[in-house]
Image (cartoon, rainbow, N blue to C red; front, side, top):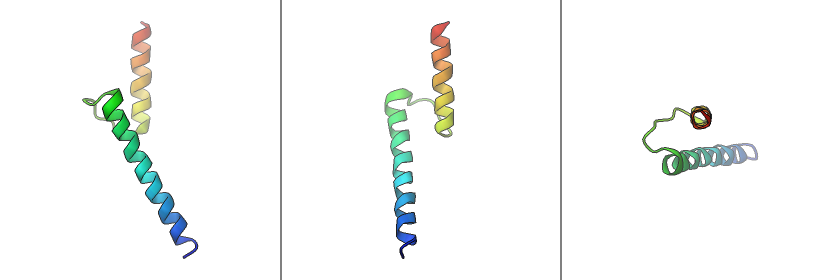
Length: 54
């Protein structure tokens, strides 16, 4: 039990954090674009920033 409970809490917290990230992305970055993960969000933002500089 001393191992299972902390692992379960860690997994639950990570899942909530990941869900929150996509909620923020959908609301404040681009709700129409479908992202496959946090790395695709970073790539999207870098491409968007590079286009803005041109």
